Amino acid sequence: MSILPGYLWKRLAIPLAFLFIIFLILALSFPRQGLFAGFTATFLGILVTVSYVDYVLRQHEKTRWARAKTLIDKRINIFADISISQFRIAFDVSYKVFNQKAMDFDKLSSIRSEMIRIAKDILLPSVEKAIPRLGEEDWKNLVRQLRISYEYGDKLFVLFGNWIEPEKLSLIMEIQDEIEKILSIYTTFPDVIGVSDDKLPMKKTGSAKADRMEFEKIVSCHVKNVLNKAISLLKKLDE
Image 1: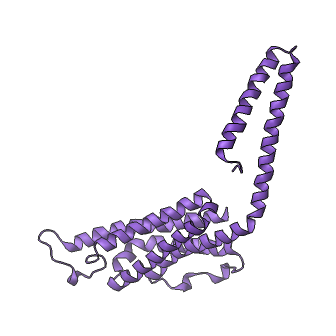
Image 2: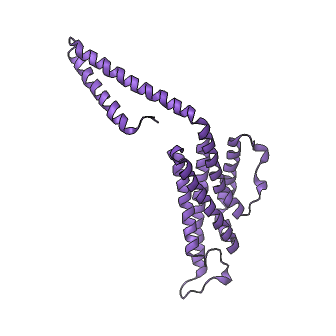
Image 3: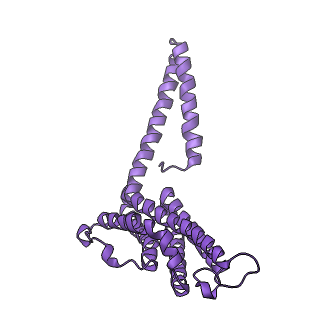
């Protein structure tokens, strides 16, 4: 990524490159005209200088922000962990599923690997069976946690948005979008989602139970998306 703003590259590098090509063609076409060769060398030198200065500034910024970037990534890591753990708790999956021997608490990459394993091998395969088992109280707890997760993502944008790489920023926003869809379904149909058969509202046509099952399928899809995107975010942090 260039340290120079895009408009500067357009106004500096592109015109210089264009002039360099023109004078190079002229120098090759009229080899006896040393002036063209001189201009060609001049514009080439300027291009090299601009590129080198940009490289030096980019390396300087990278070094200057290295510590801050590490701390920002830790907070992104927390967001990804929360996005996964909220469903582990909702699905009543014990913390004992973690292989603590494989986790080095001084090395975040090992914790990320274990979190990815939990999400991929334990939570994702159980989503479609776990969602229908959630009762009214379970849903209230999950919704409360989903809102906390969403707000944490907002804090990342407000505090560090300008310093988070676009790929990570996109994944955070996509996770929020999926959470928002789950919350939207629940807040629209709180009298159906998680409600036991005997408490479901009566309908003139069709079955409220069938509606609840359809909502559960939709929610399951969004939950899987949250988990998959959280996995991708954790992997991105290891790159």
